[in-house]
Image (tube, rainbow, N blue to C red; front, side, top):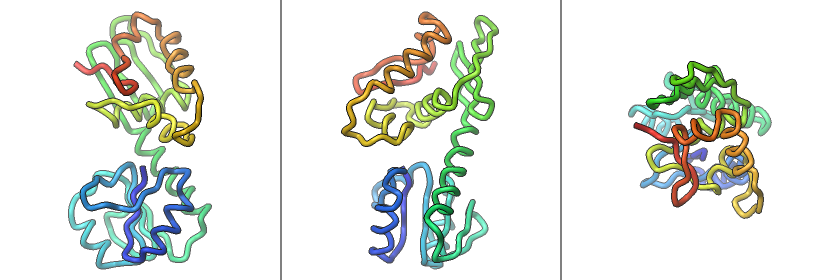
Length: 195
């Protein structure tokens, strides 16, 4: 999810609509920022929010701050905004590392290392995105719907076996027995096995 903050309600609604394929939402006080934060058109708001530590990538539109990852002038082109967001999200996900007793996952290398067999498994982009999202979703895990909307950018109401197919392929790649030490089904969907 991408969170948008602006005192201009119309601008916020327009951005949310333009970025709905990236699951953009307007900020609500009780929620966390999500995978990325956009602050638009208000320098005071920017200074206030970024005076605290923000753990996700920050993109500014029409404001500036030394803690921002990207600063765009207003107005900006939608394709330019989406390109910067995609780059920020890929960079964030690729830096993820996960380790348990059996496996070491390094998102930046798209690599899964089996410590028991000493074997490297090179992952596809979607396998890397899938495991990265499950890392972000710890300790609860992620539902099939979350995976479809966040990893594959599908609408939540789509009927598809995409998630199951990719999980099956990943299990076949590393072996069914080994896969039990990496991920499992929970009530909602899938969760990484942590020690």
